[in-house]
Length: 303
Image (cartoon, one colour):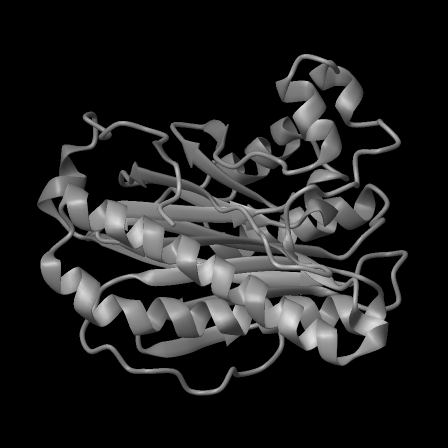
């Protein structure tokens, strides 16, 4: 089923260098149990089309090689359902998404990264999300203790100067451009829906007692995840952040913006974001994946 998609940003016309020179990606991911939890139910993945570069839970089983295809896949997932169930759900979902995405790339991008192919790939990412939903639900049905297990999942794939984002839950995707932080995804929560409908003010949402009730996620007793999709044109100097709510519950968007602006190196930015979440209380597991895209030959400057 095709997913609704939004072109969140138009072409970065002020960045002509992006069209002339390929983008070079630098990326770093980090996951931390936090200050109050005993186990970490978050997972993340950083992968190229032909190999797993880095996961928070070890190597996943080898998936289908797709040849020489440019790009990277970034995923964060926040498991729900208690210790074993939440960790199992997030790990299963990340693995299922990777296998599904990589099996798609070989034939799809042979068409070229033109607008039609872009829409097709966004739809394929939605299919990958639904495949993960079916996988988690099937495993939950086998084990009574895991019956309610589920996970949020936010993923982004860079192909050339295009970025595709597909999402379910209350983890988030942000883009920093020209020192301005843009939230790409919506929170699929009861409180988020109330804010969008005008029932609740945005200033009240952060402290509302029902803010943790997720209305759309992978898993649970029955399948039925809804995929939110975005595509946007990247420019040199853009920074991508995928994170679980262990960060956004502890830090404001402005605090996140300042860290990303001052730390152009993804490793430095990731470590500072995790440190900030823990310094503010560390109420939950916190996971971040930070990527920076620069035109080949350009060098970022620290602020």
